[in-house]
Length: 71
Image (tube, rainbow, N blue to C red; front, side):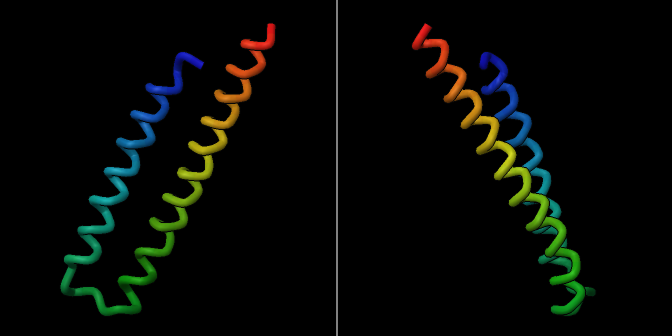
């Protein structure tokens, strides 16, 4: 899959944006612990979902390469 490096780059950009949001939340002194956790949960869930999606894309790419090598 020739698009894999581009896809990985886009995922890295998204991960970097999520990290920036996390740092903003953690540095927001106006939020108490409960509020911080409420803001963090969706971000951590999103990151995990995206990480799983990227791993699936990599697996499909690997399988496609293995299949094309057989031919």
